[in-house]
Image (tube, rainbow, N blue to C red; front, top):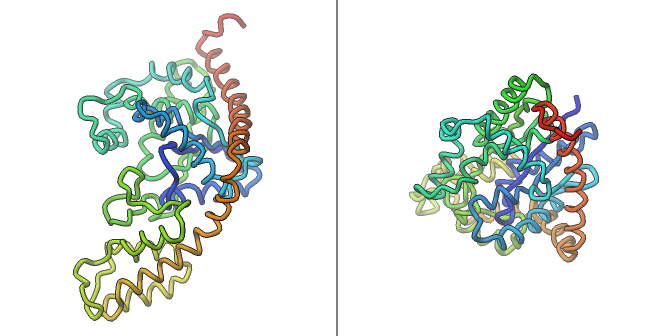
Length: 337
């Protein structure tokens, strides 16, 4: 069955292994099915909700994110890659949806509550940030997405989009909007832990391995990885659980039998952290080398990247304009035909 898929990323820096496992690999796989219609949005407007004082960061990151997309294998001929800010229908739709959502409902959104706490806004929460679940609903519903690939932490956002679609259709007695289904990453890949072992890999925490990192940078980060602090001597028995090196081996090493042997060796003692990290470094280098090479080949032609984004944005705007016209018809505010 064909799907209409909408997903995207905030351009606040280059993409890392968490993005790769949690979403990028899934997008490339979905792209292989020619019956799927895929829209991937670089959410620059949403990024400005907590970076309004640093627009240069967003501008530069748009280019970096687009490079990462192309490097992992997303094809602009099969997937519509576009800029959120270039689709004027999205903020207009957001305004109409805001009338369907209460402040209390926004305050209950656990994803927003968690992000407000992480960003330490205190009482100074930007209004744009507070209501971005509604903006996100507009992004999804404008393209009549049937499926949205997201991580586990984004489930509340998708549920809010489903509520808005349901309420709009009920109030205006229409079938304009689709209630989208969620596509979750494979178990254990939705939130990859950072190299320091503290929470998820994050740009803001500086604990990530990026798709664009050099071989030397990857090696340096792997050698810094959190292991078992009580595994002081090589002969000491080590703990596998919570050991970031083994977390990454589980995710990236295709030789599961070898990983099981390494775990058993580590637990009984006699396997040093340095040897283990060198092995992981080889595995990650094999994964990231072709991505980095493709990225470097593309990086020299900025105008080409911007032209691809322009074409994708033009395609996306046509779809969003049709949906907005249908919504305004249903609301009875298409006054001039």
